Image 1 (cartoon, rainbow, N blue to C red):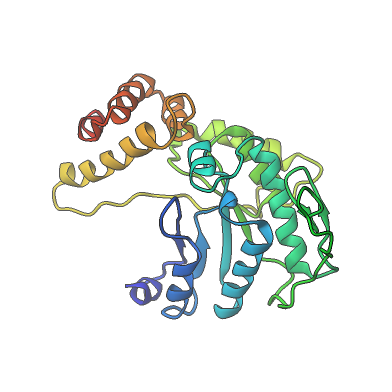
Image 2 (cartoon, rainbow, N blue to C red; image 1 turned 45 degrees about the vertical axis):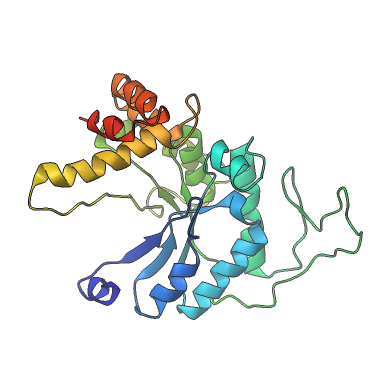
Amino acid sequence: MLAEAEEVGVESMWTAESYGSDAISPLAWWGTRTSAMRLGTAMCQISARNPTALAMAAATIDHLSSGRMVVGIGASGPQVVEGWYGQPYPRPLERTREYVEIMRAVWTRNEPVAYSGRHYQLPYTGDGAAGLGKPLKSTVHPLGSDIPVYLGAEGPKNAALAAEIADGWLPLWFSPKSDDFYRKALTEGFARPTARRDQNSFDVAGVIWVSEHDDVETAAARIKSVIALYAGGMGAKDVNFHNDIFVRMGWGEVCSKVQELYLSGRQREAAEMIP
């Protein structure tokens, strides 16, 4: 299927991860069956691995695929970050900025990587440290001095951060209704003095859900269950960033009912509420 997709012009293929399969491993498999399409993660959760570990994995896939790697990352939400990865969630924007800075320092290989941030310290000198750590430089020479980094962002502050520090943006559940909302956020990021790119060199890799069936209602029903999962079950009642997106679109009343049903274990009824 991948070879056929590439043959008809599919430009990129992307993986995801939550609290099951990881996003990196499949790319090695896909890379052996393709020769031109870009291989992206949409997305790697930053709390799943420290920044040097992801930088190493990305550089490895980039080598194996002759420079086709795209690193999509995101902060996820507190339920997954603290419940599955055992990491603190607060200050995700700051954490993301530090994460990207460290990855780029690994790839450029200008000097041994030393970093002193609020969330990441290289070498580590905190509680329990042996005191023997020293700055190190990657033993692998990347094919280039950089690998594209995209941010998964749903809220305005995250979208602005993507425009400032990333090469592209991974919007989820984007709607034309939200175009002005996100353009304003992205414009804010591009205007910052530290902005890496402008709107003409910045990429947007939108996620589009596809459901194939001869009957439209049957196809739509499959998407409804996915929307119900995200709007109703992907987060706590008062902290669900996916739910916030649908509320901004004007579906607040529906979202409230969907969330109530989903969190009470009535997932099928929640899906049936999706218009």
